[in-house]
Length: 313
Image (cartoon, rainbow, N blue to C red; front, side):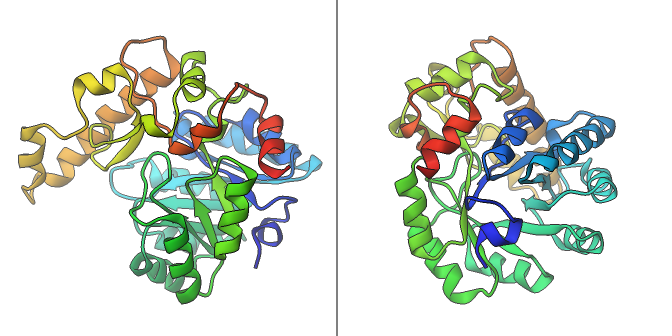
C-alpha cells in the first residue's frame, strides 16, 4: 500500500518529527499542503500541553491532511507511558516509535484505531516489529538526520521490501523531488523528510539555527556521540569541533559497566537533550545543531508550504 492511501494524503511525504523543531504550526501547514506531519511527544513539557496540541491538530483536520506523534519507547524516556495514554485518549492518525520495542504502543494504539509506524535500521528489527503488528516500517538510512542507520537508502529499502509484507517508508537523504523519485523507484511507499523543514518560517527554533541550514551543506554534517550516547548527526560548527564528537574516556569506561550502563545513558541523554534545546532555542555560542546532509538543498528560509512545493514539483 502506498503512503498516500495509508494516510489519505495527496503526496507520499511525512514531515518527520524533529526534537524541538516540529510544532503544530508546521504540521498544520504541512497538512494544508497535502502531506502528513508528525511531532515528537517530547517537544511538550507537560501532558496538558501535549493534549492541547492534539486538540488543535484535530480541529485543523477539517481542511484535510493527516497528523501523528513520535514516541521514544525505551526506558530513558520516563514520560513514555503517560504520553502514550494521552495520545490514545485524544486520538491521532498515526504514531511513529523510536529507540525501543513498540509492542505496548502497537497494542494500545490499535485498540483506538491509530496506526503505528516503527523506526528500523536493519532487517532483523524490521521483522520483529512486523510480527508485533506494525502498520509500516520507517527505514532509517545512513543519510538521515539525528539518529541514523548504517545502510544506504537503496540498499535498505530494497532489503526491507524484499523481506517484509508491510509498507516501507524511507527516512533520510531527501531534499528534492529527484530524491523522492529515487526512493519510490527503490520500492518505498513514501518518504519521511525532516532536515529541509528546519529552515521553515514555522519551525520553533532560532533564526541562527535556520540560517545554519542555509549556510552549511552535506559536507558539513558529522556524527557525534556527545548528545544522547547514540551516534547522531549534527552540523560541524566551531563549537562541535571544539568539544569533539567522541565520548569522553570516563563515559566509555562507564558504558562498559553492565550495572551502570543504563544510568549513564539516561544521564547522557538528559544532558545532551538540554544542550540541544539551548542551542535550538537561544542565541548561544554552544551550537549543537542536529541536521542531516539533505540541507544541501536548503538555500533559503521559506514557509512550510513552499518547501513542500519544492519537494513535489
